[in-house]
Length: 212
Image (cartoon, rainbow, N blue to C red; front, side, top):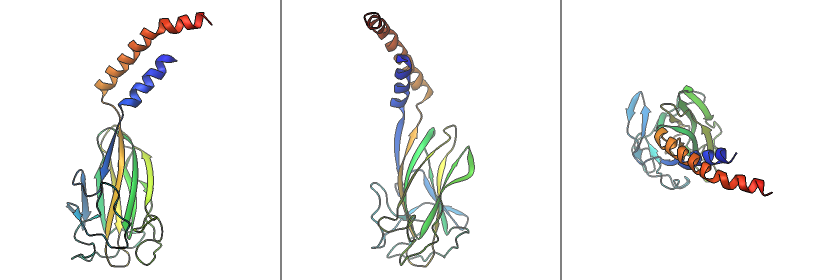
């Protein structure tokens, strides 16, 4: 039992938790009108909730407030106005998400187990005066927080399908964490060290058992 606890602790201690953020220019892109593009930082509308720590409101073009592009409306259910992607670090086995959108967004996990996308949160068709009425929307309290297991044995990414519903500004903001499994070499070394540590402690444990 002692060795098992040590081994489990060793593997848990080696897991890396990596933050990811919209608008940081790393591992992110968008798809609009079948064209892949870089995400654009936009000016948030005054009614929008402030961007999450480390992130920025983004779009496929300058669709914020003020903006120079008016994105087309999209029906729910139906194809989104644009899709945005965050590629996860290799070896991710668990992720957390925090999402805002104007007007709303559907969130999907794409990995080896779900190549077409596992729906984590459906887009919200209910509207208020500015964006979706509730999660996922754009105002304070309308952000959605979620989590999911991820198949760590290959490529994985999050897909955000963002819908424009009633004209006006349009954008997406998100952040989250990706927990990655340890590299096999590091895990083996740490596990070996844990075993040796446990063996070294075994005589003391046996003496305590005899003296009870």
